[in-house]
Amino acid sequence: MASTRVANAPSPNGRVQSELSPTDEQQSGRSMLSRLAGGLAGQLQRRLPRADLDERDPDYIREQLPLMWLMASIWYRGEVRGLGNIPDSGPVLLVGNHSGGNMTPDTVLFTLAFSTFFGVERRFYQLAHNLVLAMPWLAPLRKFGTVAASPENASEALESGAALLVYPGGDYEVHRPSWLGNKVDFGGRKGFIRLALDNDVPIVPVVSAGGQETALFLTRGEGLAHALWLDRLFRLKVLPISIALPWGLNVGDMLGHLPLPAKITVEALPAIDLRAEFGDDPDVDEVYDHLIRLMQETLDALASERRFPVLG
Amino acid sequence: MRVASSITIRAPIDQVWEFVSEPERVLSFMSSVTRWEVDGEQRTGLSARYRVLFRIGAAEIGGLIEIVEWDKPRELAWTSVLGIDQRGRWRLRELSGGRTKVELRMAYGVAGSGPFGWLAERIAAPSVGRHLRRSLAQLRRMIEHEQLRERAAERAAARVA
Image (cartoon, rainbow over all chains, first blue to last red; front, side, top):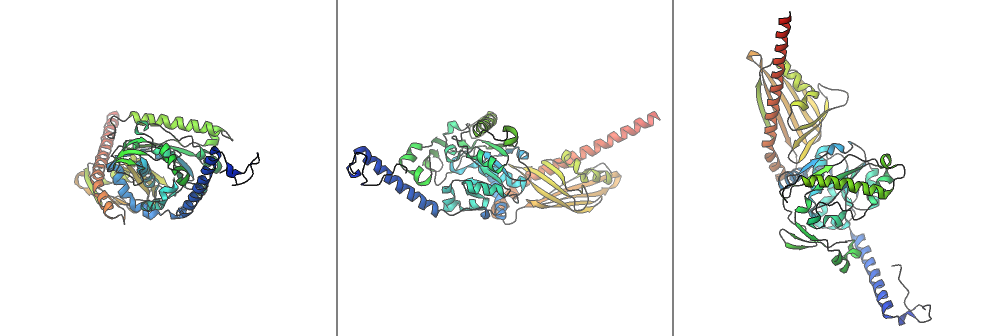
């Protein structure tokens, strides 16, 4: 947008911009498209239903626990460890690695575990991509406390004293190829560290294993997403391609898929007080590297417990 | 859904009561219980509250419970204040020969959860039943073992005398 020029304005050499060189014309065309994309994206953003903190409904969550328990216990044979590491009360930032495409079995398992361990009465929010909340069939997520990923929503949640679950890797990590399933990959996104520092809340790393075995994820399709302008229109950096039930070849995963019953293990690590461990003014890169290393070591340990793919 | 199990222990009712009513001892014999902590100043008796967790399937399920019946040494019942709806009851009855019949009941469910709630309750029931039986067996082992130790200590004291 910064390269936008006014049409027909004089150029430094005195010629008007209508006599643009082919390269300039291309740039101008791209600028117009960028403006168009920006405008369209803005319209879309405005049309997205606002998911605010008040939409969380503890009674609704309680009523859904049996279904989640069935999925977690029977389908995923789930195991959640270390919930005692999460402070019993007060705001806390739960930082997880994300797996399993748009079905995110680790979130189902962790939400169940958190809600039964602390009770649905404890305020618990999760940040999600705007587009997830725009899907009509995913509207109930808002009742679980899923809110649009924005710094305002995140700070508001923490200021209210809630536990907030974030997946910094987001769509980038959740659609990584299956052969990278045991890799923590936030794609260099560090905003969550500033969020924890600004709100002075501890970070609890939450590591999950097994999610990337619920389908055969082939590629994130970043090039495809860019070519189709999805990154500019919908903030979608990926257009994943996988082989998943019941579709076979699954492009985009917009309608979700039937996840394979892979065993999912989740472990919450001891809480980290950033200022106590890294000083009054922590270096964000240092904190990031430390967290990634810590979570990767835990994921390696969880992965080493698995004997077979899917079966665990 | 209500699940119950009972057992006969070769020990007086008062001794069994001491075990089941003492919050610090619960973790040592209750199967699947991962937390049983006193909440507040009151440790035992009517209105005492505990933070509890039971591991059932993929989840540790629990919350805050409160003692709602304390009829020493016969009935001890609790109900959930926060968390999953649940009730529990220790029912002790004196038998001849210094024995005690001990029954442990657990009732749980989620109101309004529909067919999935109905299904989950039934699928969880065998697991809950196994934990109750294991808890009672462990309780009996502990109490009867303590009785043996007490008798041995008495015999040793008599020999010294």
